[in-house]
Every structure is written in C-alpha cells, then in structure tokens.
Amino acid sequence: MRVLCKYDRFDSSANGWTTSSPGPDISPLFDVDERAGRTGGGALKIAADCSAAAIGCWKKRVDGLLPGHAYRITACYQATGIAHEPQSISLRLDWRDDKGQRPRQPDNAVAAARDGLWRKIDYTTLAPDRAQSVTIELELRWAPGGVVWWDEIELAELDAAPRRPVRIATVFHRPRNTASPADSVSQFCRLLDEAAPNADLVCLPEGITVIGTGQTYAQVAEPLPGPTTQTLGQLARKCRTNIVAGLYERAGHIVYNTSVLIDRTGQLIGTYRKTHLPQEEVEAGIAPGDCFPVFQTDVAKVGMIICWDVQFPEPARNLARNGAEIIALPIWGGSDVLARARAIENHIVLVSATYDMRSFIVDPTGKVLAEATKDQPLALASVDLAQPLYQPWLGDMKHRTWKESRPDLR
Image (tube, rainbow, N blue to C red):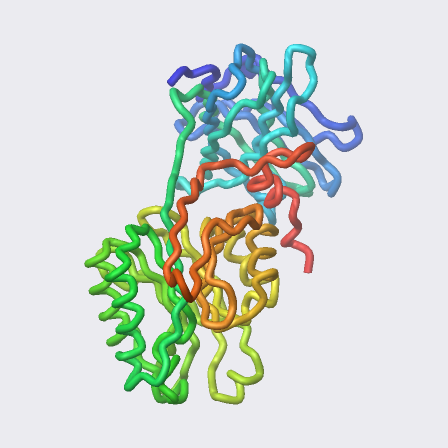
C-alpha cells in the first residue's frame, strides 16, 4: 500500500487544502479549528449560515495516480445541526486526465460508520482510464446552521483491487399433498442436502410450512425460534451455509408471515415480518410487520422482503438505504419484472425463490445470473459485491444514487 495523502493534524495554513463554493453568495464559512480534531489537534471546519442554499468544500489535489489501480480514501467527520447527513455531507473524488478533463464523473463516498462521536468514511475504488490526478473534496451543502469538522484523511494506493465473491443459491420446488409442515420442510432440506450447492447463502420460498399441507396459516404458525428454525439450523450447519426461508410465526395470539435468516452455525440471526399484506392474508388473520431490518452475515449485509412486498418500491428501497447488499425474496408468485426492477433501482443483488414465478439470482443491472427450474431445481451464481456499477456519463451508481436521493421529502 502506498500512501499518497495523509493528514491528521492541521496547522493554520491547512497544509495545502483550499476552499471552494459555486458562488460567493452561497459560500459557507471555512476555518481550521485547531483543537477540534479527534485527538485534540486541528480539523477542517465548514459552517453554514441560515441560508438553505449554502454549499462549499475543502479540497486538495493529489497527482501521480495510475489508471486502473485501486485507491482507498478514509476520513472522519463530526457534525452538529444537520438533519440529513448523507445528503448534506459528502466526500468526493474528482478524477482528471492529463488535459484536466474528467474521464468519468466523481465518486461519492457516502457510507459512514459510527466511530465514537465521529463518523468514518471508508471507500475503495478504481482510478478510471486516463486518470492522472484526483481532487479530494470534503463538502457541506444545504444544511442551514449546520457545522461539520473533518479529520484523519488518508488516500492510499492499494496493491490490488479488493474482491468480495459471494455464492448465492435458489430453489424451484413445490411440495404437494404433504402430511405436515415438517414433511414439506424436509423436502427442501433433502433437495439442498442432495444437491450440495456449496453456497454462502441459500434462499427458500415463502410459506414452506404451509405449502402442500392443506392447512391454514394459523394452524401451521409456530414461535421463533421453533421446530422449523431448528430443522433449518441443522441443515445450515451441515451444508455450512446461510439460509433464508419463509414461514408463519406465532407471537402469542398474533400470526405473522415471516422470513427467517439462519447463519452457518445454525443460529437464528434475523427475522422479517411481511409489511405489505394483500387483502387475502388480511382476511386470513395475518398481522403486518413494521420495520425493514438488515442483518450482517459472514459474507454480506442481508435484507429480506416477502412476496407482495415486491409490488411496492418502499421495502427494497428502505433495505438498500439501511445498508443491504443482498435482498432475499421468498415469494409465492408474482412479477419477475418487478423483482428485477427492485435490483436495478437500488443497485443491489436480489435472489428470489418461488412456486409460481421465477426462482433466480439477479445482479444490480437486472441481469439474471442463474435460474432454478423444474428440470434443474437448484441454481447457483457467484457475485462480486466489491464490483462497482459504472454507467456512462454518471459514474458509480451504487453510491451516487444514495447521495442524490431525497428521503427527507415526504
């Protein structure tokens, strides 16, 4: 790793950093706050006045870049008085060729993890073709009365581009005339056991405890953890894989249509209760969930939606906004076009498992990577979660989308 730019203590000259704004009338105030850094040193400060249009950045140019090489930028910031930080605070990398032209649009590093009182941005990207330099831009925009401090900024060239390959599997199978919920579940278990998919994540369909039994949702509903998660846990341990499956959960007198996430050790690490219910489920006594949780597995951050949820953009959008990299969709049947659209509009990987639709794995461009069918009931695909999603004239859409979306508007 070769460090190209590193500053964690600033002096009164800001060590070569300069300021910029689209116009003097909307420029925020810039200062070097000599005692505001994470370790008591200096920090680069931007303070907006009462204007909703205030926008400006600290910036520094770094030369000597190599096209196609991987670069990692890290920086910490602390902010006050800012309602929507992802919208108002950003770190950009503005690439330039030897003629000063942009070989592609700037990268927006918007994901920031909490690190004590500060937030830390950690972003890796590939320098575009013809890139000779990059300008680091630390920006505050559209935050009346807001203040942000920047510290511990480092740009480094990596020895190799990072990769995060994940193997995802789905099934297409419909149990019929089974004796019990356990019998239906056992059919899926046998399928996975016999096929040995060697996957990091397997998605099973919706309602695996009711399909084929002829029973009602209430009759098959069970507490969580329960007998089905115990069975799936044994399978997960045996196959060394994470498993997503849909079943019916009983919480006291309430029944939910729930998706569960079992990790490789067989532990239940996540549940999602279907939030968007069709009238048929409402009439059958199913209650709705009320949140969109995302769960960290050993390979990726996983979110889940169930069947009718895919009809609406909000469930997948909220999961992606909450950090999901893969969305698992246990579904009875529905629109494969909408499933692909949810992957495209949120720039995530989606895996569906179904009885009456397509069981497939879709990449962030909507391309179907693999599909399970009646003749081949198990499908496996490998995806690289570190792969950027560049679009001509727009840049990396995985990050630009979240920078320019407006969740603050209702």
